[in-house]
Structures are given as C-alpha cells and as structure tokens.
Length: 193
Ligand SMILES: C[S@@+](CC[C@H](N)C(=O)[O-])C[C@H]1O[C@@H](n2cnc3c(N)ncnc32)[C@H](O)[C@@H]1O
Image 1 (cartoon, rainbow, N blue to C red):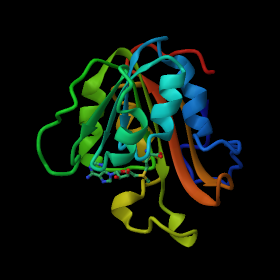
Image 2: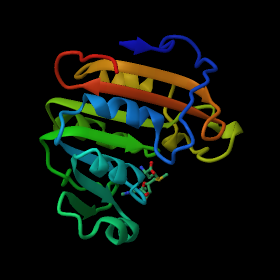
Image 3: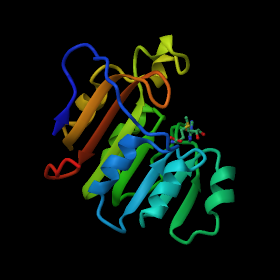
Image 4: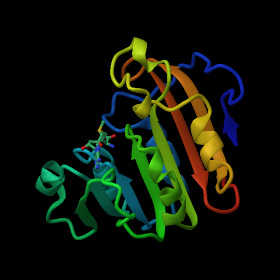
C-alpha cells in the first residue's frame, strides 16, 4: 500500500496530475481493473473519465443527473450505458452491482458509501478522489457536506476493502486545492501501480 500520512494533519503534498483533463489518480489506478471489465463512472459529469475508460477498453455505466453531454458524446457507443439519475433523491440504489471498477471524482454524497462497497464485484476496484476540509481557502466547494474530513475515505472503506493507496493534502495541479484520494480493492490487496 502506498500511504500519505493518514493519521496526522493533512500534509502539504505536491501531486502532479499532468496537463491532461483526466485525473492522474484515476489513470494510475485504472491499471488495477481487469481488462475489459465493467466500470461505473459515478457522477460522470461531461464524461472525461467515461471517455478514458472507453479508450482503455472497459465497458462503462456513466451516471449523472445531467446527461445531455454524456448522450452527446457517448450516446451511440455500445460499450457505454448512460443513466440519468438523481443520486441524492433518497431512493434505493438503482445502478446495480457486479462492477469491476467504480470511479468517483469530484463528487461526494456520503449516504452512497455503503452502496459503492456493495456494488463492487469480488476483486473490484474503487478509485475515489474529491475535495477535503481546508479547501475553503482555495474556493469552492466550501460546504462541509461536500468536503471530506481528514482520513475519511480511509476510515470508511478500510473496513471492507483492501486499501492500495491513500493520500490527502494540498495539491497544486490542476489547480491549488485540498484533496483526498483512495484506491481500494474488494478482496486481496493488489499490486501498487
Ligand atoms: C464536479 S462534477 C464532476 C464530474 C466528473 N466526475 C469529473 O470528475 O469530471 C460533479 C458532478 O456531480 C453531478 N451531481 C451532483 N449532484 C448529483 C445528484 N444528486 N445526482 C447525480 N449527479 C449529481 C453533477 O451533475 C456533476 O456532473
């Protein structure tokens, strides 16, 4: 496991995520997902990671409450299911399970944490990154509902998943922010890519 100070105050870390519009953290840990696997891009937005996943040969379920961009870009792609859903409506999880990978980037709704664990297939990989406490000084989000607490991803997911990598703290790329990131496997710990 690679680890960045999970127990103390969030450190100042420099994380190079390249100039690519996709996340370096996501790109790095996609390598853990079995080739051709089925991956959920949760709160997929305009689909920057959906596009990456498709290019890497995965089958993708891209879910968001706003799907116009997803439909425009991937509507004709047979390996991509686009699901229009309000993930915070309080309804039961509707996205199914058996995912070989789940990608969550820049989205937080804590009530979904147990669903994410349940929706992973054995050996499935969770790749999660979003803003954390302290981000307020850089800009939005500033609402604590949308900011992870220090160590939160580690504490939430380490009960049920094997943590491959965790980091938290200040990043400078693609812009200054406070971020928390985890990669974890439902099963035995994997190689660290
Ligand atoms: C900051 S964007 C991140 C998009 C994408 N994950 C990425 O990294 O590029 C947050 C996304 O969450 C979606 N979202 C916010 N609240 C939602 C909800 N209640 N149900 C479904 N999607 C939601 C928004 O529509 C938006 O696409």
